[in-house]
Length: 619
Figure 1 (cartoon, helix red, strand yellow):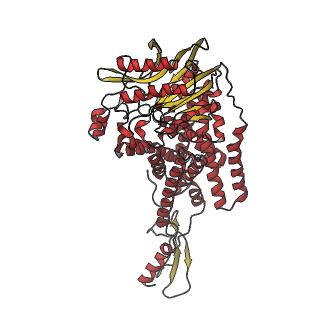
Figure 2: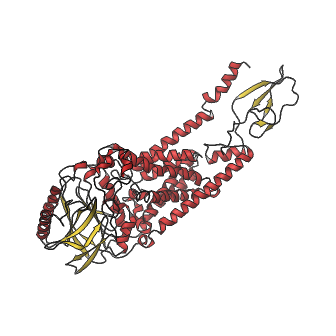
C-alpha cells in the first residue's frame, strides 16, 4: 500500500466522527452546554419568574453534564453551571454598587462551590455501592448538594445562603416539607427530583421506556405527595393588629438613602395615612422598615419630634430601623418608640450578620488595591450580640409579645431566626431596605425567603421595606398582602400569634450536621474507590481518563478494536511476535495485539487490526 493510501485509511475515523480525541472534545462541549443551560434553567425557578419545576430541570441537566469520569472536568462543569446561575441571580449587586466588579466577583466566587460539587460528585459515584444502585446515586447527589449548600451558607465571612434551592419552592408542594426539615430537607428533595429526572432521560435515550416510566412516576409522587402534610395557621396566643408603612425614598439606586430626613418624613406621613383605614388607637403596633430613619432619633431632636408626633397620631408604638454611630463604627439598630415616652432602652435589636463588602469591608487595605469601590462603604458596620428577639408590651392583650426579628439579609440565615423562635417568638418581623437594588428581583427573592421562614417555623411574618416589596405572610407561607416596588403604601392586618414549635425548630442544627457528615463520608468512600480502581487499571495496563464510569467498566472487560488498518510487509519472519496487554509486546513495540493473515501475496504480508492506544495512568 502506498504512503498516500495509508494516510487516507488512517483518516477514516476522523472523517466518520469516530476519532477518540474529536469525540472527547465534542463530549466536553456538550457537557459544557448542558451545564450552562442547567444554570440558566435553575435561575428561572426563583423570583421573579418563579417557575419552580425548572429547579428540577436545571439539576437534571447538571447531573447529565457530569457523566464524564474526570474530577477536574467535573469542577469545570460545576463552575460553568454556577456562573450561569449566579450571574443573573445576583444581578442586583451590580445595581447596588454601580460597577460590575462586585457582581462578577460574587458570582464567580459562589460558582466555585458548585465546581466543588461537580468534582466531588464524580468521586462519589465511583464508589462501588453508589455505582451499582441507581437509587443510592439519587440519595448521594441530594446529600452532597445540601452539604455544599451548608458550607456555602457559612463560609467565608459568615457565608452567603442566597440561591439556596429551597427558596425556589415557595409556590410548590414541597413547601409543606419546610416545617419538617427546613432548608436541608427541601433542597435535598429538589436535587433528588432532579436526579430522578436525569435517570428518566438517560433511560429514554436508551429506549428503556419501562425504567424511564418508573423514574418519572417516582419523581411525580415525591413532588405532589407533600400536599398531604397537614399545616396549621390558627392563632394560639391571640392576634396582633398591625400597621406597616412603606414610605418610599426620593431616589433609586446607590444614592437612594442620601436624603435621610426625607425618608423619615415619608414614613411619618405614611403613618398618618393609616388613619384612612383605622381609627386612632385601634392598632397594637406599627412597623417601619430598616433605615426608616438613618438619623438616630435618640440623639436628633428634630427626628425625635417627628417620630413622636406620628406615634401619638396613630395611638400605637412604632418599631423602626435606625443607625447608631460611635467613633469609626456604626450599628444597624431596630428600636421601639413609644408615644410620649420615646425610645425604649430595653427593647431593641442590633443586626448580627452585617453584609461583607456591603456594610463592612473585610481586609480593606488588601481589597483597596484591587478596586476603589470598597471606599463606598465609608464606615464599617459592627455586629450586634444577643438573641434576635424584641419583647413588645401590647396594651390590648395586657402582656408582652415576643417578636423574633431579623434585619434584611439575615432572613437568609435560618439559625438566627430559629434562636428567636425558640426563645418564645410568636411573630417574625423582617425590616429591610431594598432601595439600593433598584427595580431588580432582589426584593422578591427576599420575600420568598420570608415565606419559607413562615412555613418553616409556623409563624406569621411581616416583611416591611422602605421601597418594597413588603408583605404580610401567613404561618403557612401564603402572602396575604403585598406592596409594589418604589411606591408609598400602607398595610393593615390582624395576624395570628403562635407558640408551638415545628419539627424543624426542635431538630435545630442536627439535619445540617448529619448531612454534612454524610457528605464527607460519601466523598471519602468515592475517593477510596477511585484510588482502588486506578491501581487495578495500572495492574492491567489500562487507564481511560475522561470516560464515564460505564465506559471504563466496558473497556476493562472488552478492549475496543481500533478502526484503522495498517499492512506491514514481514519478509522471512516465520513466527510473528506475541503482543502484550494493551497493544504492546516484549520486543519492538507495536500498536496491535491481534494479527490477521491477509490474502496470499508476495512478499508475505500480515494485516494488523490494533487495540486502542491506551494513555499511561497518571500517578
